[in-house]
Image 1 (spheres, one colour):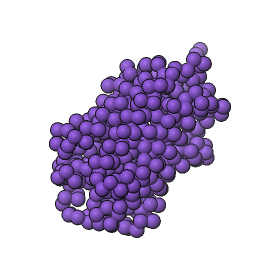
Image 2 (spheres, rainbow, N blue to C red; image 1 turned 135 degrees about the vertical axis):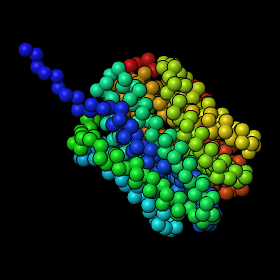
Image 3 (cartoon, one colour; image 1 turned 45 degrees about the vertical axis):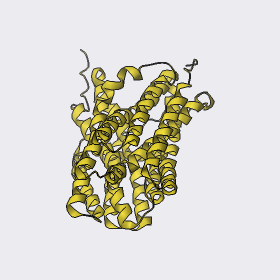
Image 4 (spheres, helix red, strand yellow; image 1 turned 60 degrees about the vertical axis):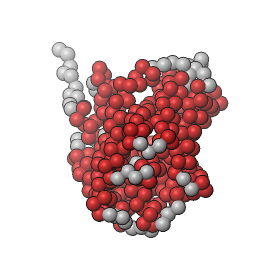
Length: 395
């Protein structure tokens, strides 16, 4: 007599992963990126410089980097599901804090908290989504893609709320937007809180191995430039649209196009991501990202802005995927965690320095066009550098 099959602990994997995707929806799509939608009104109302405005995204990026570095011990202590739920709940709390005060220090703390908490939710959610997806090997890639669609959903949802709220309540209503986003996030948190994700999931950290930076130093530099370049675009682009005369509808459409385009990235880039030729895949995708960031330099035309949003959006989520593919194709499995960690650190430093540096340049020059010029130039330079990364022969 054969032993009975063990019951699948996740009988509805697609549904559970869709619920899990609410963690990056709140933590990244809303918690990080929605700030750009509120930034113009906050800057005007609170008399911020562009440097101060950029600092708010810099401190968020610092928090995210710190959260990513501490996610593993937190997950070991509390389990995957608890890290996801409590990390996401902390993101919601940070949104509420943004609505409660205009104090620069308090807002900086809120943005820092949002970064740390989003990293815990994203890392834990990604690991748990991978665990659930493995129960359906034939559909694993599709199931995982549901989780990584989360940030795009958040971008789309916040783009439909923030501009119209600002238009309805007028100048100085940035705090109402934060309350609206907090309410939306609370609704999204409920199914995440109630889902049977398993509160005692363990995170099995891989064996630590020595990782040599030297063979991929140029690739790490390219990823650093991506981190600095993309976040500058995402921080200041809504302000650029508004300064060009774009009202609530224009801002919502632009932001929504970025979010919508993120959904098609797995199909657009799947063959490119399979390229086993050093940094070629990253060069192609990052070059596309740079083109999208550069298009608004030629004017405020709605057509140009729409094309920019679509081109930029379809590429910028895929760049992260290209670096993961690079590590998987060039290193043995035992070295994947160390390789991905090195990429994450380079990216985190870039997105930490990017907003405040570009904000300072904008203050000095006096034009938001300079921010877009710098953003596009950083992305283009990153694409060029990654082209020089050769395939590693020792795997």
